Image 1 (cartoon, chains in turn brown, cyan, purple, yellow):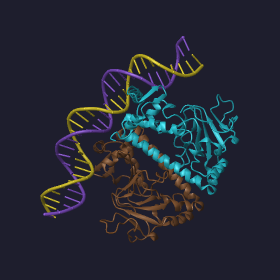
Image 2 (cartoon, rainbow over the protein chains, first blue to last red):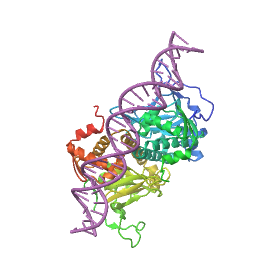
Image 3 (tube, rainbow over the protein chains, first blue to last red):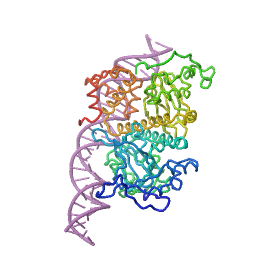
Image 4 (cartoon, rainbow over the protein chains, first blue to last red):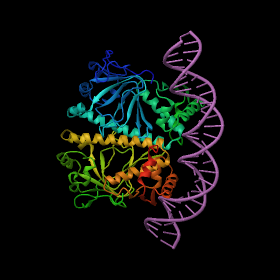
Length: 268
Length: 268
DNA sequence: CGATCAATTGAGCCGTCTCAATTTGGGTGG
DNA sequence: CCACCCAAATTGAGACGGCTCAATTGATCG
């Protein structure tokens, strides 16, 4: 986590969105960004994000598709449950949580997403969002409009295939989460969580051993099917045992092997 | 559940597969079926299955795509973890469970699939199956080869869109499962499970109030993140309280409203 | 008709939750 | 800049839900 990359080009002037801004509203929470500043072809994340594995020419075609970005301030929603789905989103910087909410208001966080990851892949069934997406810190997302993507599809089959792959990845990630929540003990879940985060940050070029949690103990607990107290106790215990060092939301991983052993099959 | 539909056409002669049959092997567990017998356009399930919502002409084009079926006897695998992905599958009759398996051999069942539902949507990331698919009863599945689907894609954009919708549905189903396993009490999980099954069977034209479980208590428990003993106790308790009637794997739902209240927000 | 596997039921234990009291840190206004 | 406030995190004590281990009954199938 730390500060996230804002990779390419010169920083654009921030244009207040005509759509999203209520004139005279208190604070700018959600703004769109000048089109000319957005380019998949020059974005540092294009080796990780939607264009992953696409030919150079195809990535350039994607520049046509992704013409807008949105800036979100911490705590702001990118979308809410029930809203119509018009696009999917790629995170350019920051981090975002996705959460379900049932009739009784009970919440379940289903993911903490980092730069390069795609949001909104649920909701394509009914063309209505089935979850909320909320920024954990100031963030920026690229917009991929569904209808424009479908128009471009015939000329860009690799995009369809890549989207399919990403959706498949989300399915198996979610299945893994079920496994974790369904059959691991609390300490195993938290260890697995830390390892997963560490690896994803490493893929973004950050240190896998030292990072800042952008989410609260309560959010971690909700995600893992635990209470915030249990999560807090586990952090303390891991620290006591010399596996990690924790200072509020700053985490240092001291013994990744021990964590790995804890998380998975300690029968190995 | 009960017996599942084998909807269209005259029953085909069973042709032993040259690929899957070891000559002289003990028992026929997996056989392919004559191509001419498979037709989306005449299949009863086409209003539920992959062709859902496609125009009549497009469904007819799908007849080109789906030229094979496989019969599986109870307990047989459609695919295993680690095998290359060549196709996705639609269930024509029977029922199939999908399960993950980690390095230590720990298993997590991620779904019990019924006719009209699609298998193999995970695994499209790495082109390698990340789960096992095992028939809970004698079953039949239609094969949709990925490469043939991609060749057909330009002429059949509605297929791409429908596949995308089904994958999205699987993502949100899986997220719901996380919510269930992560935050509901055992009785709520089982109630939700029964209601879900009841509804899906109703959509297939079966009675929502009387059905046969094709999976064991242990499999239900694994799926819901509970032990088989807990599941068994809950069945007994639900029966004692007059919510259901159970006789081994036969279930009768007596009070669907009470189950509904139990499963979700009983704060309502 | 035994053999085997699935399901039921009971007793006791353990892990995680609940409830509650402090502590810490960050932000705000005097 | 400091005092205050509020939210987040920590830590403890006790309760309880679901698990483990174990015995028994009930189906199914050679």
